[in-house]
Image 1: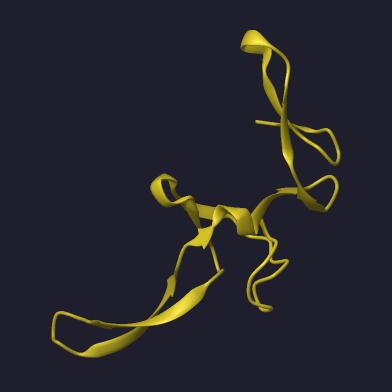
Image 2 (image 1 turned 60 degrees about the horizontal axis):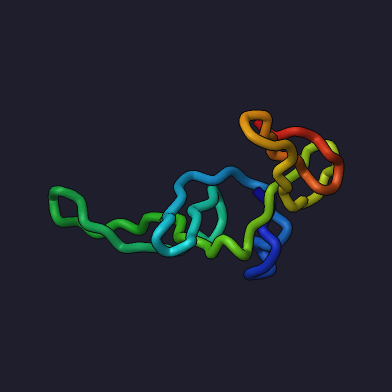
Amino acid sequence: MIITSGSRKDKKKVATVLEIIKGKDMVVVEGVNIKKKVTRDTKGDKTMVDVEYPVHVSNVMFYDEKAKAGSRIAVEGTGKDKNRVTKKSGTTIK
């Protein structure tokens, strides 16, 4: 996925999706929207941890390797022969 909008440090970053949250239309993307969180270990000591927070689906786009850019996805074919295809280069997605 490629990030289309957001903070300037995350925009145009290409990364993989770690988790999909369907009920809220959010995705967790690796290395994007990182925030610091204070946690306690078993001894009670505080530690700072980097946590990846979700991003809305409208702020990410499928990254087309052939076109080297973000691309929308179309469905071509009918019945059992349906395939997902990128709009920019026309390559089939598995």
